[in-house]
Image 1 (cartoon, helix red, strand yellow):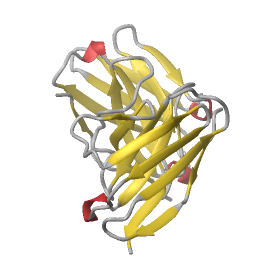
Image 2 (cartoon, each protein chain N blue to C red):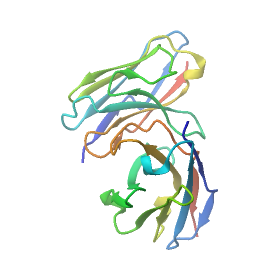
Image 3 (cartoon, chains in turn brown, yellow):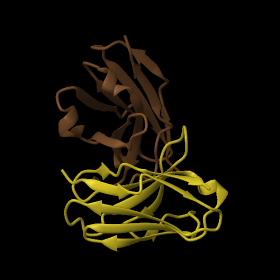
Length: 119
Length: 106
C-alpha cells in the first residue's frame, strides 16, 4: 500500500516562503503523479497542481501560477511543494496525494501539513 | 472552470435515517464524480468513484448515482461513525470540490 509522510507544521510571516515535503513509499514513486491540495479552514480541498516524477513535468492551477513550485526527488522518493509570497489566505492544511493516472480519484492522501501565515 | 454546487451545507439526522446529498456541476461531466468523507483533523477518504462505484472496504450503506450534471450521494441507514463532512469532486477537467456537507446526529 502507498504510504505518505509529510513534513511538520509551519508558521510563517506574510511575504515568506514555505516548502513542504511528502515522502512516498510502498510502490514505485515514478509510477505515480503527485498532486498537492490546499484546504483552508471550513472549506473544501482545492487542487493546486501536480508533478510527474518521471520527467518532472508539472501543471499548476491558474490561481497558484507564479507562486507555486512542485518538485520531485526520485533519489529519495520525495515530492516538495513550495509556495511563495505567503498571505493570510494561505493559512491552510496542505495535502499530497498520488495517482497512477494523470487524472484519477484521490485514493491515498498524506496526513496533511498545517501552514499558518500570521504577522 | 467547472463549479460544483453541493447541498445542503449542513444536515442533522437520526441514527438509522436515510441521508441524501446532492451535487450539481456547472457543465456536463459525464460520470467523473467522486465522493469523500472527512472527519476532523483527518485527510479526506474516498468513498465513491466514477459517480456510483464503491471504493474497496467502504460499507455498502454508502452509494452514489447520477451522470451529466446532477449527482446524488446516499447513506441508507445512518450510523454514529458516519458523522463527518462529505465532499463531491469532479475530475472531468482538472479537479474541483464542492463546498461540503457537514452531517451530524440529531
